[in-house]
Amino acid sequence: MAKIVFCEDDPMIQKLIAAAMRGSGHEIHMAADGVEGLALIKRVRPDLVFSDVSMPNLDGFQLGDALKASPDTAAIPVIFVTASVQRAQVEEATLHGGAGVLPKPFTMGELRKRVADLLPAAG
Image 1 (cartoon, rainbow, N blue to C red):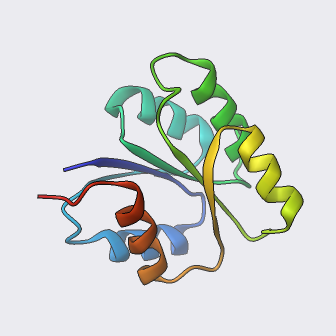
Image 2: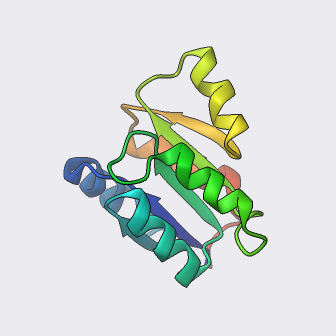
């Protein structure tokens, strides 16, 4: 079973994520902003992080920079979630240590597929 942290400030998207990941066999953790997410990541040591780019207190790119700056968290793949999937945004995600971008809006199936592509099967 893999551990996944989702950093998302929108309660409706948090509900979508929870519904999509229910029964996945993975341990799911939610953070409402980047500061909470960073503390959570340091505590649970997840196998994968999804982070909204636009969040209060510490945005997704700042979170990615903080993770990559620490030897304890540098190897954790980060998928940035954003409504802006222009080429410049994708390139910027890579500069901040992103392993990919998940465009908003996304479906439950798209989220599950992304997780399945990045993590071994649960069980």
